[in-house]
Image 1 (cartoon, rainbow, N blue to C red):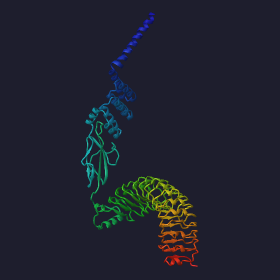
Image 2 (spheres, one colour):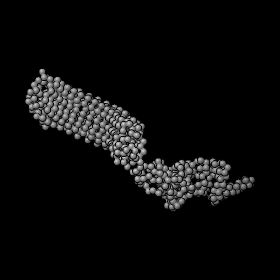
Image 3 (tube, one colour):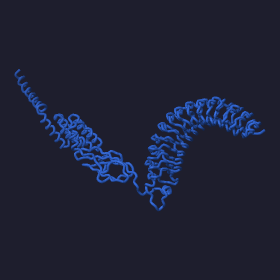
Length: 570
């Protein structure tokens, strides 16, 4: 027992001593421990052992009750080792735990060293603690200022920037970067719009608020140096300026309508005419339409017969005032880049090879659209164009017009020379006054009977046999149904306004239903099976009747009323 006690007592004393030392180091005098750990951290850092050094720094930071200086020293160690991510993490955690001006300054400097000026500005702009905010603002560089207030200028100006520390700026719309050259001399602004972004960076790592300066230099009167001889000759003639005389920008500002000469090669001279409203560039090979981007007043553009890249449609789409666009026979197979043109009211894409119309679905301001002679197979993209009034889709590959049912304001619809078999959807067009669907594959036109506002109707060259349902169209003035197999005319009521009717090349045997037409002036009924036209003698407005290829023999009653009759006498 005594032997056991002799062993136990020293052991307990040793444990007590160790516990006392631990209590002293980890509870009573944590500062001593912190200093010891910092010494070890710095020693290992000095000897290149960054991994062990950072471990000692982490321990020291914990023992220092998150001392800001230890956090900054640890962050600097990480940066020296190239680990900026851990440096940011360390400083951000320290700020969240116990924010101070020193920590914000250290984090700002860390951002600057990585060329993260946006992060640095956002950090300092969004400090919520008012005391820290005031302390930082007292040390932070002021936002850069300039010698010219932002705005409009009618002369070229040199903008001088003022700020403490190093000043970085851009004029290309990008955020400033420490990779940009440091500002040293005034910035000469070109004609047009320029936005200057500027930030000052102090040696302490703090950055100024971002300065944004917007300038527009316009209306500068100066001599014009033309780039294209053909354009120069045309503009000299237009302004009445001789070959030896100078042309000034103020002269070209008066031009609101211009047609580019066909032998033009360079189009940059268009930029001298900022007040152009109507422009025609026809039958030309255009390398780039970029020069159009400065024509902010342009409302009407005609590029018919010209060839250019479909990518240049993006330039056209950005013209802010453009409402009328004509691109007939431009070799276009796609109009995808035109999607931004949402203010157009008139668009003519005739004689191209466009198939996909999806981009048109957003052009809800369109009132007139011409797509004739293309490769269109579907009009689905047009169903939401509620403002459309005139639509020409002739010479395409359509089989139905159903999607136009949503175009309730449509007054004129031309869909000749397609493969249309059904007129579903047409009955919804209550204000339609002109409809032409000739040269299709129609066998039924009964949906047209609901379009009682129709004034002009052409259903020729289909495979129709019955049009009796069209008797409801009492407002018709011109009706063409030639080249079908129709055997009888509709029984129109009195008061029908028909003036011209063409039913040639059908199977008609009688024109008696036309005898009540008080306004009828011209009848074309060649090559039918009509034998008697005497019922037309009392149509007192009638001027001419054509009945070639019919078994008509007696026309005396009509000639007594001075009505011209063209027929085959027997």
